[in-house]
Amino acid sequence: MYFVVQVIHIIFQMMELLVLVRVVLSWFPVSRGNILTDFIYEVTEPVLRPFRRWLAVGPVDFSPFAAMLVLYLVERVVIQVVLTL
Image 1 (tube, rainbow, N blue to C red):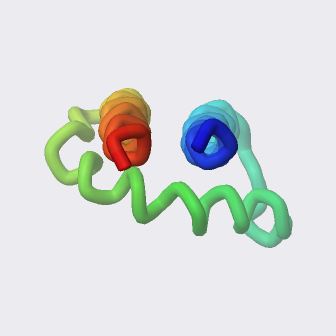
Image 2 (image 1 turned 180 degrees about the horizontal axis):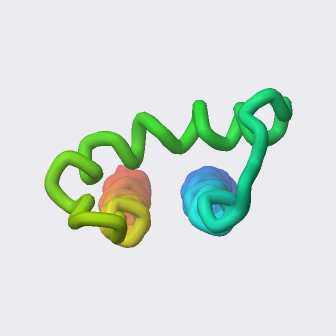
């Protein structure tokens, strides 16, 4: 069971890291033709899009912060469910 919890934790940490990398990438002019950049955008966009509708205020976009918070909460719930099995 510990192995499953660790795998879940690693998956959520990787997603949070990708969101953070995307935030940093948004500060620099990055070409969208780069394979790594395209991968990061394709993986994180489904997570960020729902939050962007309500949390993009002018030039400031709070969706990454909200997405990371929700990812953390979902991770906690999933781990608790797995531990109760």
